[in-house]
Length: 73
Image (cartoon, rainbow, N blue to C red; front, side):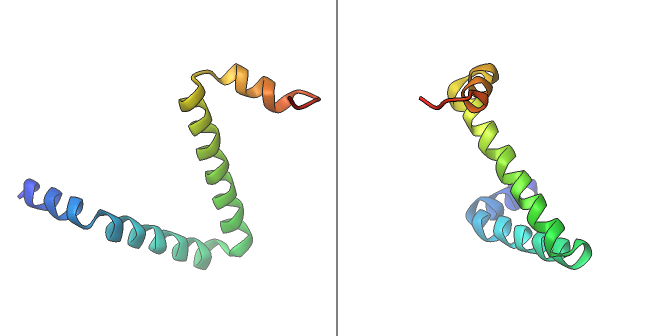
């Protein structure tokens, strides 16, 4: 049973994940409004961006120094 569900998910993962994402976005728009939903999406995107930088470069201190420095290199 679990193997069948996993096989269906693997075969249709794009449709399933995007459908769930669309449902979540619609629910947020209805319950929270446009401004709160946009703020949440911006925060999620920023968190993803920072997390990707940490994964790629390996340490947070170097990333923070680069972003918070007064002059860019």
